Each structure stands twice: as C-alpha cells, then as structure tokens.
Length: 257
View: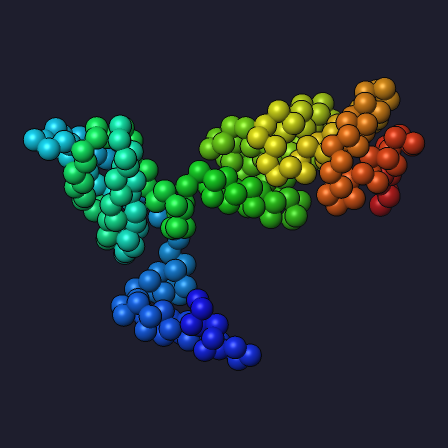
C-alpha cells in the first residue's frame, strides 16, 4: 500500500496499477486473486471445518480439512489451534471445495479457529443477516411489504436477537396500521443485541407513537422520556422525542382519491 501510494501520488490509478505493484512487491502472480475478488461476482466463501486429534510420541497431531462451496476458490487461510499450552498457527492453501491439513502440537488441542484475524471476506452469519435485511429494505422501498417481511424474518432465522431485523419488521407493521404487532416487535428490538445502537432510541420513539395512536398517553410519554435519556441523536431523534412529549403523535391523514 505504501509503494502504491508513493508511485501514484496526485495521479489517477486503476485496479490494474494496484495489481502490478502488489505483484512486484510480493514477487507472486496474483492474477487469480484479483479475478476472484475484484473482477468476479461469484460471492464469498463460507468455511466449514472437520478435524480429528491423534496422540503421537511427541504430543498431538491434528488432521482435518477446510471445506467451502466455491469450486474455483483459492486463498491462503490461517488456522489457530488453541491448546492447553501455547497456540499453534498453520496457513492452509484452500483450493476448491476441500483442502486437507495436518498440524503437530505439544499441548493437547482444545479448539481450532479459522481465519482468527478476520482477514478473509467470508459468507458467515453476520453477512447473511446483513444481506437479508438489505433485501428486505429494498422491497420495503418499493412498498412490497410481504416480501420485505419474508427477508427480515429470514434474518431472524440466522440471528434470533437481531434488533435491526425486529425494528424493520415493526416499521412495516406500523405502516400497515398493525400497531399492536408493531409495539411487540419494537419491544423485541429493545430486548435484542442493540445493533446498531440507534435502534434503541428509535424503538422508544416509535413505541411512543404506537401508544399515542392507541390512546395511551402516559405510556407514550414514558417512551419518549426513555428515548431522551439515551442521549442518542441519530437522525434527529432527540428533537423528535421532545416534539412528541409536548404534543401527542397523530397519524397523517390520507388524502381521499
């Protein structure tokens, strides 16, 4: 990266320029790498690990394989073997759908972590959740609410406590005048992983709106006050909460056609 910056300061640069620098510095032909990560839309791998531990004269041996579902995938992937003593590290050249490895350790292996430093983009649970939620948001933008709800619920199948998934479900329910269900799911968002953090303040605000609409002003005021206590001002949340503390929220009247 340093060499690339030095060579291209105040210049326009392309991916090919970066590839040339990386290959020169590493002394490797990295055409496969750039084809895989920069030029292809083949997706990211999802790693699976199988292994067996054997006792040897000098300690232990771990034999196993790293599997994933992209047949054209090629990437060096680090393994961290956690033992009763110092951890051992092994770099496996993952090629195709399965690559075998063998590591000798002095201490008894307790666990193996794939890519412990998170260097490789891979399709794991967090990415699966993010993709499903983004798809749901795209459907919601088109007012295709049934499809949006399917995607949000698919996210919850992977991560049961996703505050963002519950929040998005509640948004759709609120828009469809399903205020009881919306209140329940805004509450689930508050009881979830609180990621991202803004789901907390806006769940309180929208709970307040749900209570105002259903004639429960005291409960609405409590939610607006809780929103203010978070001190989170994402997208003007504090002003919004303060506004409805003064004046109860009312649904916008739809113009008749």
